[in-house]
Amino acid sequence: MKAIFDDRQWKHDPKHFMANGTVYPNPEQLQRIEVLHSGAEAAGCSFQAPADHGMGPSRPCIRRNISSFWKPSIPTGAGLRMR
Image (cartoon, rainbow, N blue to C red; front, side):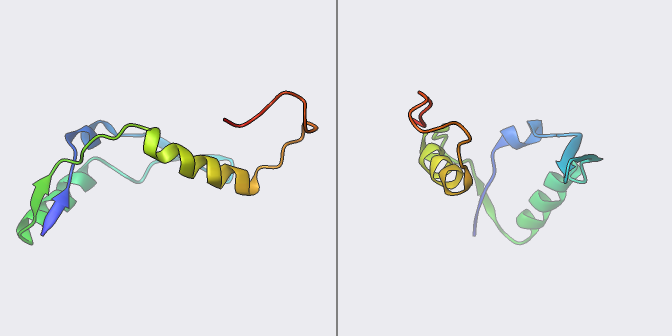
């Protein structure tokens, strides 16, 4: 089985996260990558790095999701438009 892994994941090490307006210590630790990686290897997975497509592919999705709940408080025609 193929597993996707990018070495840049090692750089993602947030110390905190926010839930309901409260800051908490992040339960996700870098050790989690080691455990999952070892488990995937033990299961016979081969690793492949993903192709980097930048932020471009996610923009239409983000725009669509924001527009589904975002209601502007500024009257229409005030000069602000989503691109």
